[in-house]
Length: 352
Image (cartoon, rainbow, N blue to C red):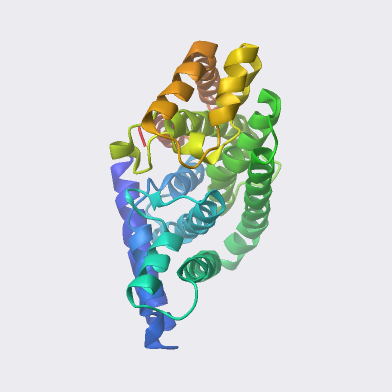
């Protein structure tokens, strides 16, 4: 059921990017690598946020025959590109989806052409600007989508708070990483703002508003009851993949989150339950950028032995059940409920 909407999103994104590319390179042909890099980056991805927005639109009574809705939802994929590019810079990640991260791509480009100055600084500065460009294009995509003035007025406050919450979640995540440890409760709050609201709840509200749902409607309340727990479950799955995922599937180095020192609920729960000796061993390795495979395996074994993996898997299951219960609401259309049920599986039972 998701393949049709996904294809429509891809086509809408391609149309927008083609026009945006022409506008950008009309300034100067030197900007061609910038546009090309962002277009290539956007060729991948799960399109979850636009898909949730479309589910929110359909669930509130909107018709997916309206082509302008797909154009509007493209804005969320562009916002996601901004977040990922900047996130990779903050984390010092070398890869994304099996390819060099944006800052590494332009660091290499500068080095290969023997550019003047420091290649690493050039790469970071360029990636920062490309992330900013994606953010600007996200607003442009919404404004040029062809939706009505009323729809634009209804959806803009949601789009605004979504961006604020995204930046808040990113900072809380970065701040958590600067601490020696955090509680599971704090880690789940970070997951709520970094992922729960931004990935699922707000896109659902975005789509609901496009369909005419009021801010205080029962439909949007049900979307929150679904979106927040499912968004947490989505982030918890991400946390497991960041430690135990297959790098050939995730496109990220093995144990990437262990080298970055990510203070997730998985790590918080493990640290709370490790013996003093195991905690000392864990702390001596966690967050080191040059971990060997043996050291990564040691950290994985300590986490497994703490019971943290079972705890997180159970939490994912509980949050998913909460989400699915919330959409058992007659105010949500049957087609919307079907889409939301499919998306719940896609968000939580994944390997990438």
